[in-house]
Image 1: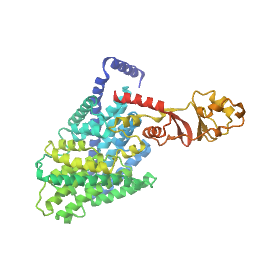
Image 2: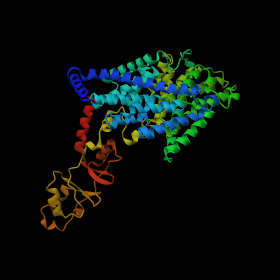
Image 3: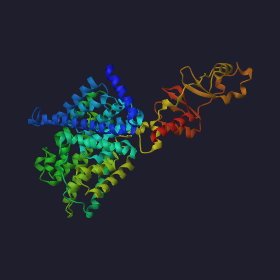
Image 4: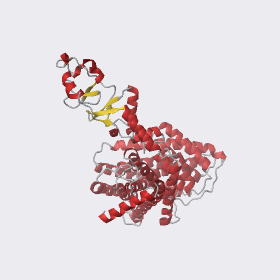
Amino acid sequence: MPTRLQKLFTKFIKWRYKNISNKTFTHVLAVGVGLLAGLASVTLKNLTYFIEASLESGIVFSSNQLYFVLPIIGLALVFLYVKFVHKEKLEHAVSSILFALSKKKGIIDLKKIYTPLITAPLTVGFGGSVGLLGPAVSSGSAISSNLGRVLHVNAKTRSLLIACASAGAVASIFQSPIAAIIFAVEIFSIDFTMLSMLPLLLASISGVLTSYFFLGNEVLFDFRLTDNFEVKDTFFYILLGVGTAVASIYFTKMYFAILKLFEPLRSPKYKLLLGGLAIGIMLYFIPPLYGEGFSFISNLLDGNHLSALGSTPFDNYLSNIWVVIALLFGITVFKAIAMTTTFAAGGAGGIFIPTMVMGSALGNVVAKVINNIGLGFAVSESNFTLIGMAGLIAGVLHAPLTAIFLIAEITGGYELFVPLMITAAISYLITKNAINHTIYTRELAEQGALLTHDKDENVLTLMQLDDVIEQNFKTVTPTMFLGEMLHESVSKSTRNLFPVIDENDALVGIVLLDDIREFMFETALYRTTTVSTFMHSAPEYIFYEKDSMQQVMKKFKNSGAWNLPVIKDGKYYGFVSKSKLLTAYRRELINFTK
């Protein structure tokens, strides 16, 4: 930045501190972040639709129906971008944001502003079976994080702005401002207080306005409810809730199973070839797996399952409703496989919209089975299609409120509120009991880096082990004589604890001042007794690479110790004292709650 601009910017920052309160400035930033996140979402959608429209108009392969080879081309383009431009492994969008919130004080790399805007359209536009919401949230969050850093906001405000960006992105894509706010609260574990509610509301509104400004009144689903909820269908909605719960568990387990299946393939080239081939085969037999799948959902809502299924090798048998049901169920089964294979092959995207596609297919299947089983029942297929989406969102993402309000808003009313609540609640409760953590959060939870709605847990998660490690301890060796220890270590130390290390700097024991106090003035022992005589094992050890702050606190509680040694790369690294740990905890708690 030129010197003159730097001076002007410095003057602005000083003026802001003098004339605008932090609260007001946060509100202003929330509006700006919502607009920018909405703009990123619109850009993402338009780039993707441009690629899709170009391919559909005959630029590549469409005339001879070879569309199923397109995903491997998109994955190859993403691979080239990552290898030669990005030069880092692509991360899961929402998971990386959650990690930045818990362990990086809300600091997100500048590259994550534009990388999703390139990799996601290439993946989805060429038919990768993933969604755009995750990349939109990722880009918006990176914008808000870097804007916050430039404008010198603190870590807590920066985290709130990231949540605002996610609300703006969701509101822009779905034009559902209430669901967008709830999404930020449920997924990012933001405390829903008056301090956070207004910035989230402002960001959500500005995100929606951005979408209206660039896209007009265009909506994802041009659909209005025609069939109201009937009490007699309650049992079937309960059944749908159980079904979506089972599907959610399958979705999550399949995700991790396929990623694990690709792990032995070290080279990204082999992953690309294997993944691209697998996706192509699935697309050949089940064309609706191509791309995001919004058109598939729209056709199901319109009652046009033939258009939803497209041209398949089974076209001659579609007059049989049970063949249609089987194909729709196949989409339910294979959407999770196609989505995860796209990720494993190196593609970029999100899981939210594939979850909706899978839920819509399952809901429609359940309704068709009920209507055609021959028992005289008749339910609304469009309603079940919508509520199936809610059930999958509630189960897969553990976000029941987001599911309820999103479906209610995109249908333009709340007539289905009761069945939405029934299905979403059942799906969430069953899935939550079967799987503790979602696709977004499992790895973070294993690392102890997951923020939740538990304030005590969050404070520990936000704490950094490096901040509480003390290294001003005088080390001794097992072969050191007592006299040497007294002159070289005890006399020069302000601590009452001495780590004993070997020639490789590995910790072999500790000596407390109390252990040698009664022998300190027995000079006859100075040259005859070594440190190994007095040393003993530490009550517990803290391992730098793998112990979370929750585990550290638990080790202090179980051992009753006041100081515990830290081991890093198999070597002695320092000590953590209970007093410093509790002081740091109280300080972080004050910062977190004020």
